[in-house]
Image 1 (tube, rainbow over the protein chains, first blue to last red):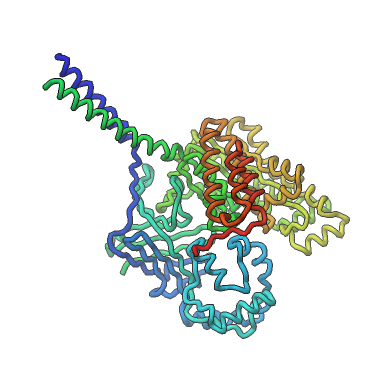
Image 2 (tube, one colour):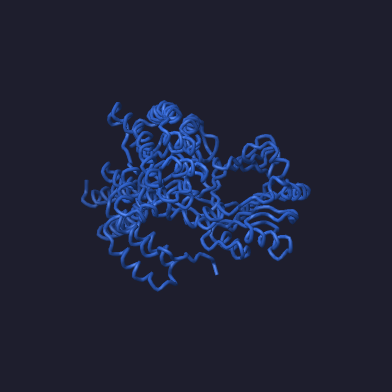
Amino acid sequence: MKKTSKIIALCLTLILIASVFALFGCDNNKEYVVEEEKVFYVKVNEFDFLNLGLAALLIDKDASQVILRPDGTATLRIVILKDVVGALGGLITDDILKGLDLTPLVNQYAVNIVPGFDINKPKETFKLLEDSMGLKLYNVDFDDPNVKALFDTLAGKGSIPDDFMLPAPIGIEYNCNYTMEDLVSEYTGEYTAVYMGDRNKGGESYVVMTMETNPETQKDEVFFEIKFLNVTFRAVER
Amino acid sequence: MKKLIVILLCAVFCATMIVSASVVATNSQAPSGTIVFLGDSIAEGVLGPAPLGERENYCYYAILGRTNGFRYYNRSVSGHQTHQLIDLLYEEDNGATMTATHIKDADVLHVSILGNDLLQNNLGETMLKYAQGDTVVLEQILAQSVKNFAKIVERLKELNPDALLIFQTVYNPVYNNTPIIAQDVLEQIFALGRDYDDLRIMGAEILTMLNSIVYDYLDEHPGAYVIADAYKVFGEIYDANPVKGQALIYTDGVHPSNYGHAVLAEITQEILIDHGFAKEAPAINKYKKIKIEQLERMFGSYDATPDTIKAVKEATTFREVSDAYFDGTNGLLPIYTKD
């Protein structure tokens, strides 16, 4: 072999080795987001909270949604039915719940979960929650006299006022960034993960949903689960 | 012409090597192994970190995952007792969390369990009876825990016989004015002539019995796993300085605080280094970066923070970094609103 050919062969071999080496070092998992906004509606008959069968009856199936946007932001919103809110208001004024002392809950947990928590300043306190974790109360107006009365009594007596009326409808909303990733298990198959919230390299967000296409409807669905709270639900595209 | 070809090829080769090197350099920061955390609320870290939004900066699962460049999965469930962990270990993958797959593929499995076997079986009543010299209930609980613990180890070994398996012991969270025991039970215990010091000793005795499940199994099955002895290290810190020892525990009297999590991370980090899964210096540097980022972001407006950052930078061990950070931020309210 001529000298030039030898050099060419050597170079090509080295290029090949380098390329293979580079490829082996690559992380094959690719993060992505949806191309067009997707809205998933919570299926009330597949919603469970604390293994209470009745939980599904509380949920507003139109307002409770998971929204994934092409800009990488997401919203997860669980809203309680208007009528149920009224019934809950009645329940809260019941002897069972009125006078409930929430002080230990505040002192042991709230001040740590959200340092700076001040029950006298609910608006500012919930802003801390929103800024640090993306969680907010949906449709709660802190300037509403009933809501003000609630927090005033909570701050003063550590209890819920006797004549408290819940504003309607209310819920909880989680706003975050999200990414999706196609995962492969060599044992059980392929899954699409929706990581709700920022995640560090190598880690996951706390909420990991599974997205799949319903073979019958051909619509996408997401499955949500937090074992700690026994919360599960499925939300579907319409 | 030949010379030109050679030069061109060399140029292409060099370019390729540079690109390859850059890719490899990027991937040197990519996850270098997989660690899966299993167990209870101590591991899940929902109750413990303050603010909760800093969970990924404070909890031991994240500190260990991030500082060592692991892929890390936390599949712990708050409230889980041993029997519930057994159930979880028999669950098939049913979605993107892929718990079974991650356990099978892990290089390291880390477990915090047993605590709820006591805590969720009327701890107050158990302690009261123990104070009265009646250990029947406690022995019944422990007898079941022994069986369940063995099943957990056997199942984990079945799923992944090659992983480094680490079991974390349960620390003693009892201190003066502990909220872990209800007031009415405390009064009954105090009526027996006991005080908080006695209560801590009782806690130590009961937890020694609980943790002996971990030690006894290992005695019978040498090499089955490694023990991350949180009980021992937390106890040493408390004995040397009760105020600092109490600072290891969250305000609910049960879970580890931010500082407690840091110490738990340090205990396991030493094991990972000993077994070749982690390197000390790069991990400490990563840990410093995490702490400095937090200091600048949440405590940047405080006059003392530059000195704290300096102390963190000068620290040479995990413990020194943690001490510098938590001593420097003690009593300061983190600022974490967006405007």
